Amino acid sequence: MSASVGIVTTQYADFEVELQLESGRLLGPLRLAYETYGTLNADRSNAILVCHAWTGDAHAAGRHSEEDRKAGWWDDMIGPGKVLDTERYFVLCSNVIGSCKGSTGPTSINPRTGKAYNLTFPVVMARDMVRAQKLLLDRLDIPSLLTVIGGSMGAMQALEWGIHYPEVVRSIIPIAGTGRTSPMAIALNALARQAVFNDPLWKKGNYKPEHPPADGLALARAVGHISFLSDTSMHLKFGRKFTATDGLFDFFGRFEIERYLAYNGASFVERFDTNAFLYLAKTLDLYDVAWNFDGLDDALSHLSCPSLWFAFTSDWLYPPGQTEEVVTVLRRLGKPVEYHLIDSDYGHDSFLVEPEKFTPKVVAFLNRLG
Image 1 (tube, rainbow, N blue to C red):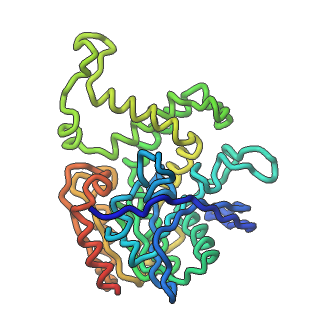
Image 2 (cartoon, rainbow, N blue to C red):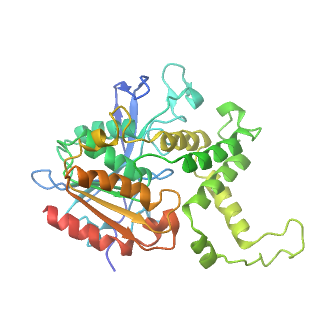
Image 3 (cartoon, helix red, strand yellow):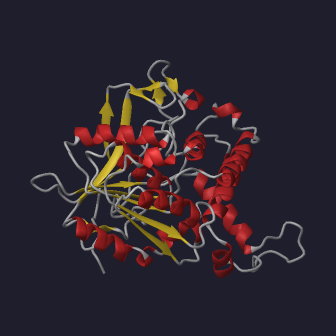
């Protein structure tokens, strides 16, 4: 079994800048939470940036204390002898702006008012998140990235990095991503939003942190969570089993899948802020790599580095066809692109549940880069 990176500490970088966002608004000053694993080599050329998904954070590997029961969200990928081998690479993961996990977001204090931003926080696009990460790279004096890797919203960031910072990025590895969010994915997020908006405790975003719209957020998370699973994975994990403590003909009796969704939603409320959830959902909805370009071909023409793409057969949130649309254009443009469709029953979450199905290809790709 590969070793862990051990005990890690989340670090914070503060920037006295005003970042111009795609919306035209300015956001600043900025704080970014981040963690690093491994050591930069002498010529600072072995850095890998890991980008997290929707409700992820900077804590990608290791534990914050000996008592920590749960390791970082990609701990099986990052560490000595692992896919992102910290004996070879310097791995960096930054929490995105708009989140509630240490980086500037709607829960942060607006210096102009002395109060939390709440809904006065500007809408953020994936491209804005990447621009903020570039500030962090400059602060850490990292001139280039061997690769940028991430799944889902992380894949969006990886693609944006490759297009907008070709002089910095030497490769990208987007996993379970899309070139633009589909109407169906937007519709699911619309349901999640309405679940929050209809909770009387939401108060148009001005709820007290100690009294969040818990029912609305739990339901919103359940909607999102369903989209991460698949019909087959639900059959495998739950089937039609009825909760053992409930009577089959009790009106409020629940199937195991119902109990699971309720539990997952309730636990999510304890670890994530409602407004941050909504802002990041908006980021996902707005994603279109061709934004401010003359179409998809124009946008992808700016990607010069090698790219390694993965899609999963049972992913119905960002189905393989959406990845293949991007890959097809890249091939037509003569770009160095590699694509693998991975057979998995675990839906959009496949990249987290069954990493062993695609990670050998990541290792081979990184080895070829040198």
